[in-house]
Image 1 (cartoon, rainbow, N blue to C red):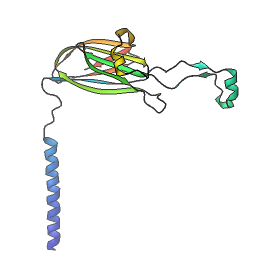
Image 2 (image 1 turned 135 degrees about the vertical axis):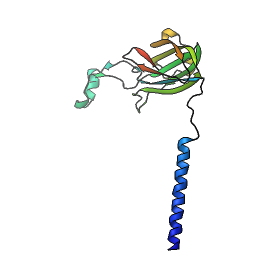
Image 3 (image 1 turned 180 degrees about the vertical axis):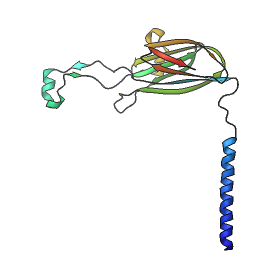
Image 4 (image 1 turned 90 degrees about the vertical axis):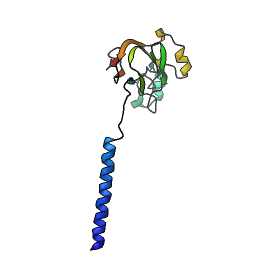
Length: 181
C-alpha cells in the first residue's frame, strides 16, 4: 500500500514538473520578431516560365510511325524556362537568383520565398523578372542584363515603418509585381 502511494506521488511530481516547464516556455523567453528600428521585406511568389521552345507540327511520316491513339499533329514541349529575379533597394543589389522550374519534367512553377530584415525608413525598391531565361546561363549573366531585357519590372517608393512587413508577390494577371503592407 505504501509503495502505491509513493508511485502516485512520484507521478504527480513528474506531471507537475512537466506542467511548470510547459508553462514557463509559454511565457518566456520573450520572442522578438523584429527589433524596434527594423522592418522586413518578404519576396514570395510562384511563376511558371515560358516553354523552352515553340510548338511544332508533326510530319505525316512521324504520325504514321505512332500508335493510332498517339497521333496528335501539334506537339508542344512541357519543359519550362528558368526564371531570373533581381531585387534592388536604393540601387543596391539585395537579391538575385535564377529559379529553376519544379517537377520531374521541369514543367512546374519556379518558386521563391526570401525574407530581408532592413532598417526602418524610406526606400526605392526595384524588382525585375525574366521568365524566359536560358538554362545554361549563370547568376553572373543576370547582373549583365539591362532593364529592357526583363519581361516585368516594377519600381516602388516605400516607407517601411518600425515593425512593418512588406510582401512582394507576382501576379501575371495584375501585370507584374504586387506590393502589400
